[in-house]
Image (tube, rainbow, N blue to C red):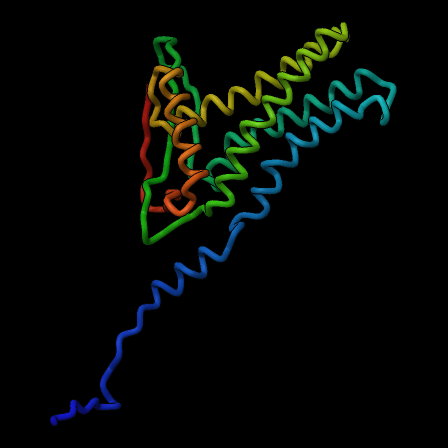
Length: 213
């Protein structure tokens, strides 16, 4: 029988790309600071609102503190954490004719270069969805308990956080105009991603897609 001889000096190609991909998958949180502040301001606003009577007797002080936390949260989520954690950004601009336009920016999906992990995306969307629901609960509790002096603050909390949620849902769905179709499509995708996390797509660094409507 003939035996095949292998030369020890023969070059062997090594695939370093797979090692980098495995190392990335192990990195659950790639942007820890952005992830922290994505939850810090909105959770702090809720905790301050619930516990303000324990901390201070000043209604004005509590009102201003919660409003500042909500404003910081709106700005950071809209301009920083969404771009880093899920590769999305949105804004609204007015043209010369006075018409308002929604502008959506999303990173193109690239299998070779990934910016966000699945854990970051889940934290981003859960924080974006759950916190406005909590403020809606505060609205009804404030209304039924006749604490009307807090009503303006609760409405501000709902408005600021719902605006970010609305903008990012439209941005994720590609800027479609029909919000009912967008919401249904978004919820179906969220359920599918929860059931099949391995199929979750992550935004990449290569290029930007911009949509206007």
